[in-house]
Image 1 (cartoon, rainbow, N blue to C red):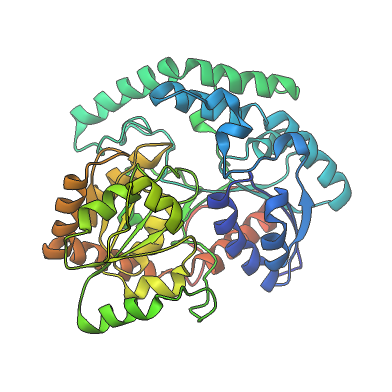
Image 2 (image 1 turned 90 degrees about the vertical axis):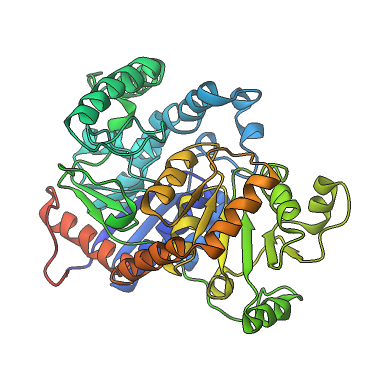
Length: 443
C-alpha cells in the first residue's frame, strides 16, 4: 500500500478522541503520515498515537470537563430543550469555523483523505466543497434514520414487522423533521455559510456517503434490512491500557483478593460528561452497602463523601482514575450511565451491565444493552438505590445476562477493530469511492 497522507479531525471530547487514537495509531503503524486537528487538551494523546498535532482554532475548542461553562446556553435546560441546545452549540454552529480550519490544513498538508468523528460537521462541509474522500468514525449507537428503527433518541425497540415499520416512518417524520425542525434549520444555515446549497438534508442524516466505521459488532446493534452500503462494523475501538502496576490504587490488593475468593466485584462509573455524583455513583454505593460485593467507583473519595453526606461504605473502593485494562478482567458486573466506549469495553470482557442512561444519547445505548440481553436498562439517569440494588442482584444471579454478554464478547473477539478500520480507510483513499462489502480476508 502506498504511503498516504491522512487528515484527521475530532471535536474536543474525550469519548471521541480516545477511540480515534486507536485507529490513528494503527494507521501510523502501517506507515502512513497523519496530521490530526484536535483540542489542545489532547495534544499528548495525539502525539502518542504517532500523528502530527494541529491545534484546533480557539473558537472551536473547549474543555469537555465542564460543558455548561463552555456553553452557557445549556444551563438550566433539560430534556428535549437541552438536546436541541447541545446539538446546536457543540456540533452545528462551529461547523463553518471547523471547515475554515480544515481548508487551511488541506492547503498546507495536501491530504489524500479525511477521517473525522461523526460529530465533526466541518468534515462534511469540506467533503462537499473539496471532494476529498471522507470517512466517518461513529462514536455512539448507530443513529442513521431507517424505517427499521424509531427516531434516534426515543430509545424505542427496533421494528418487528410491516406495521411497526410504518409507524417508524411516521415517527421519523414527526420527530426528526418536526420536533427538530430548528436543529435542521441551523444545519442549513451552516451549509449556506460555506456556500453550499441549503437542500433538505436533516442534521441526523449527516454522515460520509463513502465510508462509515461503526465501532461495535452487529450483535449489539438493531437489525436493519437495508444497512447503508458504506457502513462497516469494525468491533470495539479504544486505546488498550497496559495492565501494569502503574496507576493502580493502593487498595488494588482488595480487588484481587475478592476475585480469588469468588466475591463479586462491581464497578460503577459515570464516564466523562455526566459527573453529578448524586445521579448514579452515590445511589449505587448506598444500594450495595449491605451486599456481599466489593464496589469500585471511579470518583474522588472526598467528593463522594460529601455527596453521601457521611462516610463511604466499607465495601467501597474509590479512586479518580483506575486502569481499566487491569480492572475489567477482575469484575463481575458494571453499573454505568451508558457511555458508548465504556459499555463496549465491558462487553469485550463479557460483563453484564446495569445502565442508567439519562443524558445525551445514553438512553439509546441503554436500550440496546437491554435489547441484546446483556444487561438491565433502568430507564432513567437518576435511579433510586432500590432500583440499582435489584438490578445488580439480577445481573449477578440470573445466568441469561452473563450468557448474552459472553456471546457478545465472543463476537467482538473476532474483530481487529483498529486494523480493519485502517484497511478500510486505505481502500477509501485508493478508490475515492463508496467502500462497500467485506475486504479480502475478512470473515
